[in-house]
Amino acid sequence: MFRSLYGTVSAAVQTRQARQDTPLMQMQDQPLMKVRFRRHARATLATLVAASMLGGSLLAGPLLAKDPARGDLSGVIRNTPPRRAAPAPLAAPGAAGTTAAPAAAAIPDDTVLARVDGAPITQRDVRLAMEDLADRLPRVSEENRQDYVLSYLIDLQLGSRAAVAEKLDTTPEFERKAAYNRNKLLLDELLAHEAHKAVTAEAAQKTYQQTLRDLKPEEEVRARHILVDSEANAKAAIARLKAGEDFARVAAELSTDPGAAKSGGELGWFTRDRMAPEFSEAAFRLKPGEISAPVKTQFGWHVIQLEERRTRPAPSFDEVKPEVEAYLARKAQQDLVLNLRSKAKIERFAPPAAGKEDARAAPKPPANGDAKR
Image (tube, rainbow, N blue to C red; front, top):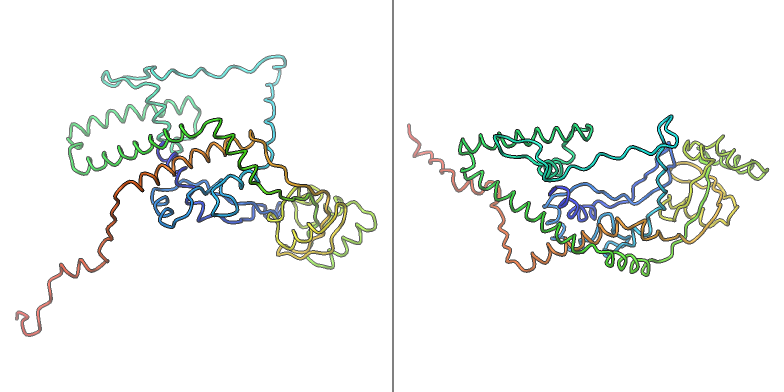
């Protein structure tokens, strides 16, 4: 549990350093499209420490706006695509008119699942272990996963008792590890408590509305393209289009971009920053229905047809609610950590330079005349 929660808090800082434009769709699909690449990888305590030393806002990561100095939600509001409704579940063959079987009832937390020499292991113990093990659990059915974790807890009790019998819990090293894990768990609980206080319906709506007010209108267009390997081939495609041939049919026949060719060259809606600069410059100059002259990019030569243009609509609150709530939680947690640091007296001591300590400890070699014969 600690790894996932604190990793979420500190990953926001890590992604500020790693944030970059990364091509998403390669040649086998739509090679020109680029999106903001946001890492969600887990980070470490060292990441948060390093970022704070560099200064600046910690409100970065998945919710960072284009301006690195702004820790707001404009980036995610602007770049969130409309979410499609989940498809209705299909009935099993021959099950017309019937309803799906109800999901298995949740096991109450206080249910005793096993006893080890009289000591109970409950469903609550299993649930906590599942949270702790997380992605280390094998990919098996829920029933087998439950049994796996229960067996692990049984072995955990047996092993811990054997360790106590050997008095392994009385060593200085064990005490250091126990203190470290206690502090780690307490910090995790504190962060979770702070997030719970911060994420309210009122705060989420207020943040969303404030972001909308600050969001600048952004133009986007919908276009098609044909990608070929030479200017001559691009001009030949344009000649066919001017003669009245259908753009989608010519794209399917000539385009070397298989993804776009399958869709008749359709690229969908995009803003200027999501395409190669030369491509965007040409596309945004066109009027709906117009076809461009040959356009050269790093991918080859393009023929572009503009279909529509509009001001990009902002997503609804429900579409970005999870991101807004994650933003509020992360902001509260980071503010808490920074506040705790500001109130504490923290002293850092640089370790001695490598080699100096050894040089002081090493005996001086005897002079030539003093060497023993």
